[in-house]
Amino acid sequence: NGEELASPYTFTMPANEVIITAEFAEIEYFLIYTADDYLAFVIAANADLTINGKLMADIDLTGKTVTSIGVASRDDSNNPDSPYSGVFDGNGHVIRNMSISRKFSANKSAAIAMINMTKGATIKNLGIENATITNTGAKEGVVLSALVGDAHNTTIENCYVKNSSIVSTQNGYNINSAGPIAAYINGSTVVKDCYAIGNEIGFTTSGGTATNGASISGFIGYSSTSVTVDSVINCYAK
Image 1 (tube, helix red, strand yellow):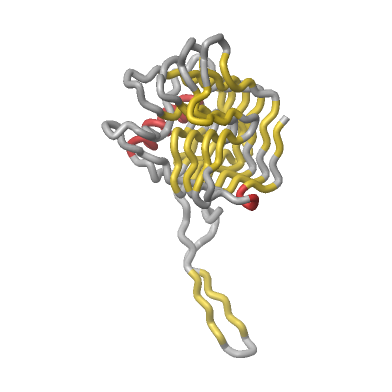
Image 2: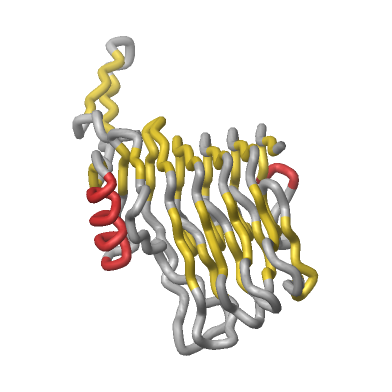
């Protein structure tokens, strides 16, 4: 991951007296040990969408008011996209009991997720358990996910979502796409070594409708035509 490598390194090949010098850029992380550290990271990430975060312990967000990272306004020109482009390394740890509920005042599409939108980001080595992601109002469709809403040119690897609820709870409010790992992926996004199990996805009340050929899935909600069969590797859902 780069953080333990000193720079520069010099390699000597005696046979030909060739010296190769390589410099490795160290990755600096915002280290997250507690639930309050995570909330502070979210604030920092929304101020600087390139910041890197790393979990140093399992995090329980029970009772915490959690805000998403980034903005995926989709079709709202008054609220432009602000995608996260850093590295979030779960470091083999789990975020539990994350609850994000949102109602949009305008009749515009948007995303609700831990990270609403990514572009050129890497999300890795992370587990999410018992999350609750809730749409309580977006008339033209919304994308919902526990992990990433809109993933553009992003790597998601070695992650899972388990026993989580990803739903629209209000009559007549619509879902465009929903999935535990990502609601929507496009570009050069790659999802590998990930899984999703035991999740609830969809509507919890009558009257909701899927919009614009919506896709609601137990893994990834929808993928663009730029995504190929090589974009999802060694993954499963059940």
